[in-house]
Amino acid sequence: MTTNIANIALTGLRAAQAGLAVTANNISNQGTAGYSRQQVVLSTSLSNFSGGGYFGTGVDVVTVQRAYNEFLTNQASQAASSLSYLNTYSDQMSGLINGMGSVDTGINQSLTALYAAISSFSQNPNETASRQAALEAAQSTAARFRSISDSLSAIDQGITTQVGSAVGQINQLVQSIAAYNLSINEARAAQGGPSPNDLLDQRDLLIRKLGEFTGITTSNQGNSVNVYLSNGQPLVLQGLAAQLRLDTQDPDSASGASLSLTMGSHSVPLNDKDIDGGQLGALIAFRNNELAQARTELGRIAIAMASAYNQQQQFGLDSSGGQGAALFKLGSPMAVGSRQNTGDAVLSLGISDTRSLTGSDYQLSRSGTEYVVTRLDDGEEFGPFTELPQTVDGLAIGLADGDLADGDVFTIQVARHAAAGMEVLLGDPGALAAAAPMSLGADADNAGTAIASRLRSEASDNVDYTASVTVRFTSAKDYDLFDADGNVLESGSLGASPHTIAYNGWAFDLNGLPAAGDVFTVGAGRGDPAGDNRNALALGALGTAKIAGGATLTDAYAALLSRTGTRAASIGVSQAAQQSAYDQAAAAEQSLVGVNLDEEGANLLRYQQAYAAAGKVLGMASELFDQLLASI
Image (cartoon, rainbow, N blue to C red; front, side, top):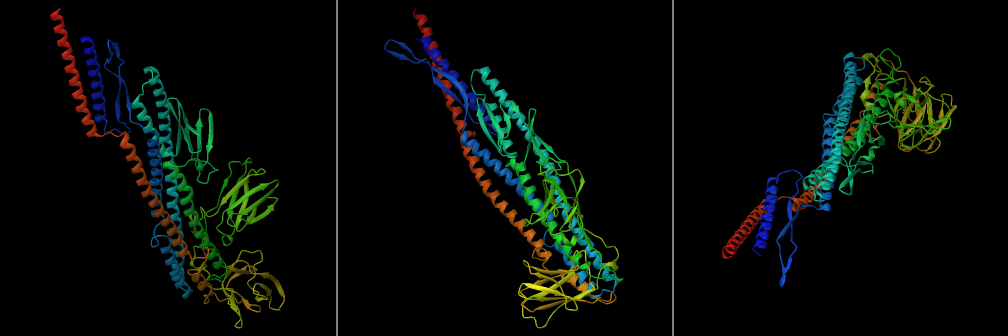
């Protein structure tokens, strides 16, 4: 019996010693990232039957287990991934706002200076100084468009760099998770089943870090954790690790960069929508949404400005009496082919006439042997054409090499790079067109509310500014065009507002509703370049004209800034809400797995007292044994 008491005391010593070791380890790792609080698991040793009952034989140290709850861990990991997404998105929005400037420092400041310079030029068309100032103001405005476009391009390039960095870190994390899967399997096989707690903690930490870079899902397979992208593509399968690859020279991507996923010898191209969540998902979503929209809207404003000013400039007469030449040029369009294309076509794109540009993107497709061009803003189709090149809305579309196969599709982005190439074409101040070849008038007896304005040029194969034309309405919608002899030249009907009436290379707007019998006259009357300022006044009036999608240029840019700021504020609200959600999820997890120093201090005292008590029992057993020997 004395020997049995000693053995019981020894098991108590070992249990208390194990408890002290685990507690000391918890205290030492209180600040270690990813560490989960550990605790010793004890079990009563099997009792022995002796005489009248079963007598205990002590305690067994079963294992050391970590505090862990899969639900709380997954909840905290998902919250961390969402917070990383919003933090990254918010940072990018701040960069976008800085790149676009404010209402005072963006495009509008240059536009205001341009309007003032053209107003001065319209009052003094014969002064070289006023012409020079107007031309320099136009050059400054074009330079400001290019500068802001360059800022947005720099943001785009920065995103590609950040995506490359994120891809590299994702690959490292994926490889490490696969390696930990192998190590955990080896440890459990070698030790016969006990959990390698430190390895499990480190693997969970790596999975959480991976989730901060991209949205993932996980599943357990034996002792391994398999990791997948949000679209279900595997990143880790037990001990196998996939690899993300970034191609920065992809002609079939609007951004010029694309991702693919390689597992062994199998490679899968990834769409941008396949990367959802985390830092990488935020970078891609921001580039495809906020940044792309800002670049497109900036380009649309540049197109609206270049189109309107060229329409007016090319209508007037320069200081030598010649027809005015185009004032602005724009950046070239860009084509992006579908990944399903099977042909070898390389498109040739250009702007044949800036005056006809709409700002819309287009789609070129081939069906059988015919080509169709679709304007994406309103879905209007042009064609079918049996061959290329073709010109649509001032856009020249041709083939530089190869050809489209049946079913091939290209998206033609017109606005995205328009501002990047905006330049003033005129170098001579005398080339500014102040005089006008025609005038616009309305009959004093008109009964309707229609007001005619903005007599300007229009792209046409039959330009004639020497013949007067009378427009007479036969109803509130239908009209006839008459020449000076009263012959009907053409008939037409007003389309959707704003109403435009055009003929032989000129056009004017009609705002309001005409009445039957109302008459408007486009009269031939070539002004004297030495004193006529009618076209210069029309150029000056563009400052208040609603030429940018129903808004003035300054209002259109202010609206762009406002939308961007509103979106940034919305992201900020979501970011604050997600920070609160993450804090709560992390606190819930830490309440279970975190090390509480007060609790561990109490455990130290408890195990210390248990160790001392077991030692006293062992000492007592030794004394009893000595007394027994002495009595014998």
